[in-house]
Amino acid sequence: MAIIYPHIEESNLTHYISPKGEYQLFQNDNHYAEKVREWGLSSTKEVKKEFWYKDKTYQRLVTIKGYEEFGVSNTFNTLVIEFQDGHLSCIFPDYLKDMQSSSFGKEDKVNKADAEELPSSSTPPTEKPKAESTKKGMSDTAPQPSDSKSKKDERTKLELPAEKVHFTATVKQFALSWNHFNEENDEVVVLDQVQIEQENPIDVGLAWCSHSKTLKKMELQPGEKIEFDGKIVKKKLPKGKEVEEEFVLNEPASFKINNPSKLVKK
Image (cartoon, rainbow, N blue to C red; front, side, top):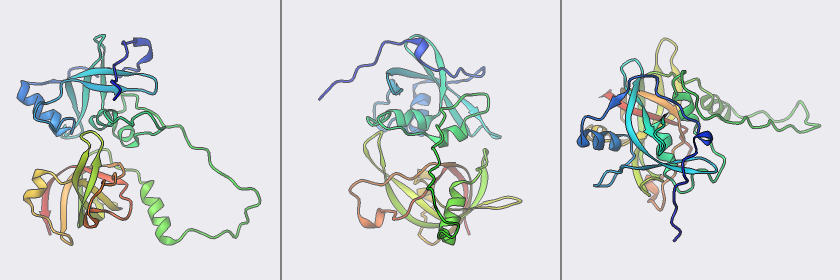
C-alpha cells in the first residue's frame, strides 16, 4: 500500500482565507476533543491532531488552532487552521472533513453547501458554470416536464435562509449513509414534507439530518409530525454501503438540516 506524504508548504500556491479578527481558542484538550467530534472530524478514541488540506495538485498537513462563530446566535462555526509555514486560514468543518477522503480532488466536484454558508467577508471555492446544452432543430412542441419534476427542480433551486429557522416536518424513515472520513455508515433521519415556517413559508420537501444523541432521546417514529429549529444547507445524502433495504432511501434527498434543536412532537 502506497504511503502518502504531505508536500512542502509553498505559500504562493495556497489560497488563504484569514480570520476576520479574534477567534475562539480551545480551553483544554477535552474542549478540543469535544469540538472536533462535534464537527465530525474524529470518531476514534484518540482524537486526531493533524488533518489533510487538499487541492488538485498538492496536499498539506494542518492543525486546528481554533474556530470562529457566526449567525444570529453564534450557532455556526468556521475552523481556523494552521499550515506548516504558520499561515492561518478559515475553512468549514464539512469541507475539511471531505478533504480527508482518499477520493477528494480526483473528480471535479464542488461543495456548494459550503459556498452558501460562507460569510460574505470570505472567498469560498467557486463552481465553474456548466455550459447549457442546446439542440438545433428542437421544436417548440417538445414534451414539457411533469408537475412532480418541475416541483423537484424548483426545490433544488431554492434560496435557502442563511440563519437558523423554524421547521415543520414528518419523519419518513431512518437510513444509513456512507461516511468517507471514518469509512463506515452513519445513521440519519430522513424527513418529508419539510417546510420552513416564516412569513412566506418555503416548501423544501425531502431533507435529512444526523441521528444525533439529542434526536435519539426523542425516540422518533416514522409518520410522526415534528417541529424544530435548525440550519438548512444544500447537501445530498450519500448512499449507504452494503445496508439492508429498510435503511436505504430510494429517492434523492438534496438538503441537510444541521444542529436541529428545540424539537417538539406535534
